[in-house]
Each structure stands twice: as structure tokens, then as C-alpha cells.
Image (cartoon, rainbow, N blue to C red; front, side, top):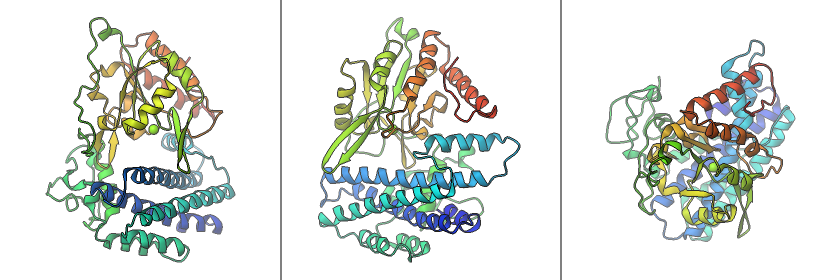
Amino acid sequence: MHVTQLIALQIVKDVHLRQALLRAQKFESLAVGGLVQFFHLLAHASPEMDAATKAAINTSLKNLLFFTHQNLLIVVQILLNRMVAGKSNYWATNLATIVNAKMAKKVKTKGEAVQVLKVHMQNSENIIRNIIKTQQAHGGKKRIFALMNDWLNAITTVTNEKIRETLYNIEQFRADALNLTSEKPPATGPAAKGISSTTKTSGTSNLVGAGNSLTGKNPFAILKASAIASTSTAKFPNNFTNLPKVTPPFLPALEGEARQSTYTLVLDLDETLIHNVEYGSDSYFLVRPGCVYFIELMAKFYEIVIFTAALQDYADQVIDQIDVNKNIKYRLYRQHTSQNGPFLVKDLSLLGRDITKTIIIDNISDNFILQPENGIFISTWYDDMADTFLEEISPLLIEVAEKKVPDVRRALRAYRDQILRQISNGAKEPSIRFH
Ligand SMILES: [Mg+2]
């Protein structure tokens, strides 16, 4: 959040872009405030709110974070554009590739950036207003929602410091809303850089930033620190206590020859294969182009597993419809995910499958952060009916299985190297065809 402000004030000269960025930053604050508060409501099973309403708010918050994230990507892109062009810089090229892949709407000019920022903010505002309305309609009197309402009405004049300060001081807005107090950041390893190795009982007091100590009163700092601290370990089962109990290994053991010959393809569901849309009280989903064929085709080469962080009822409904020929062998749901700081991750080591023969495709690379070498990052899909990713990735996947590569991680590394080579050779849109 500070970064957006700094960039707006110190790097961006264009007055319209600067204003849009400063405003976007306030929406970031509101989005994070709303999110943490929602976790708090869930954690304490707010009696005034039913499950459907909570699910609706959950979806809203997902969308809210999406727009916030997209705005942040614009900020990163602005930074990248300001970097001195010339010698090819591996780091900047990589970052540009990631930003490009994750950006839902590409922006090329300052004017476009302002436009897209404005659209995202309008959407964010609508979502926040809806959340407030839903909460109040259910008799909720949480102070934060009233405040968020006030802020929305005065967002052009209220300062970001004011938003932050108030959020810190709200009684409910505490670190334990995210159940972080039981988490101890790892004391060693590069991920724990800048975090002291002292382990105290409070999750808020043992986090020390590099150079400046983070007080226990600053929830943003806690979020940030725990995100940094939680890249190499995850806790199973996750923190959701009302889910069905499951025990690893999640998949039944392979017998005999199948143990040697089976390759496992783990697929994410939302924004990888489908996109769920809520329209008023109706909910439906769009299917990524080529999805049904992709599953049919891959089933000839792989044992297919859907691994979603979504709830089982929702996921089953969707999977039943996209997999009429029953090509998907197994389904894993939110109860199978592990807790990694404030995030849920998909730990492939709990599947009971050979890690050298397992590939995961997901639109959130953090989901496979525990086994990054087994992951293929797929661009998030919402409704682009011209998308060809599934078609394009198929030859690579078929080749891996047909050639019976001894270790998929090496094959995927070669694939990534190939893309990077193309980029460094000047390819604007690198082909992911595997030759
Ligand atoms: Mg997804």
C-alpha cells in the first residue's frame, strides 16, 4: 500500500494517473480491511448471518481482491516502464512476463492505465457497498462497516493514514482474526529473512521487520510478515474446523505396474477450467475454451485429479457438468488444502503419488508454492472465449507422459527455459508450444 503511494507521489508526474493511483490505494486499504473483518466474522460464526450470505460475501471479497490485485499490477507495470531500457535484464523481463500474464486487461498507455484503474475502483466501490448493505440487512452493527460506508462517501478527501489508523484501533480488528497467533514464523531459511528467530507466544510480537520493528498493533505488517514467513512450510489440516475430516495420503495407492507408469495431472478448477459468475441471486459458470476436450485428451495420458480450494458441494456440481464421461479420477476440495500463513495451499506431497510424476496446473502460483517445480502457472481465465492455453499446453503434457520422462520437474524446467529464451530473443508473445 505504501508502495502505491510512494510511486504515485515520487515517480508519476501525470496528474490524472497520480490521482487515480492515490485513490486506488485507498481502495486497497478498504479491501484489506473488509477481508480481515470477514475472516473474523467467519471465525466467530456470526449468528446474524447465514451460510449463503457468508458465501456471497466471500465471492465479493474474492472479486474485490482481484481488482485490488489488478491495480497493483498496473503499479508494477508503471515501475517497469520507468526502468531504464537497454541491456536486457533477466529480473525485469521475468517480472514483466508475470505481470503481463496476470493482467486481465493489458494497459499500454497512461490514458489506458487511468481508465482501467477507474473501472476497477468503480467495481470495488460497488462490491464494498454491497458487502456493507448485506451486513446491515442482517442486523450487523459492526463499527467497521459503518466506517467503511463513511469512507466510501468521502474517499476523495479522507486520508489513507486516517483509514489505517482507524483500522488499527478497532477492537475486532486484531491479528487473531486470521488465527495467526498460533503461527510461528520459521527461524531459518531465506524465507525468514528479516524475521527474528525468537519465538514468543504471541504471533504479533515476534515479528521484526528488517530495520524497523513492527509493532503488534499493525495488522498490515502482520499480514505482510506472515506472507513472507510462510513459504516453505504448511500445516495440515487447515484451520477450517467445520469441514469433513480427511487424512493423507489422499489418493488410493497405485498397484503393481501402475505405480511405475502412472503420471498424475492435478488441475485447479476456478479460473483455470471454469469461471463462476453470480448474477443477482443466480449463479452459473463459464467453461474455458477447450476444457472438455482437454480433459478427454489428458485422461488418455494421465490420471486426472481436480484439486480445488472451493467447497465440495459447489465443486462437485461443476465437475459433474464438465466431466460427463467421467475422465476425472479423483476430486480434492478445501478440506484437502493446507494452511500456509494466511493462505491455503495444495501440498502435492500429501497425495500419495510420486512427485517426479505429478504436475499441477493452477492460476495461482502460490497454490503450488511448496512444490514450485511441479507447477504450471496458467493465466487466470474469466470469459475470454479466444483463450487457447489449454490447447497450447497439451503437446507439452502429452510429450511428458508419452516419453515417460523420469522427472517431470526437469521437463518443466526445460519448458520454462525455452520461454525465457524466446523472450530474451525478443519474442513479444512467446509461444508455449513444446518442440
Ligand atoms: Mg483457481
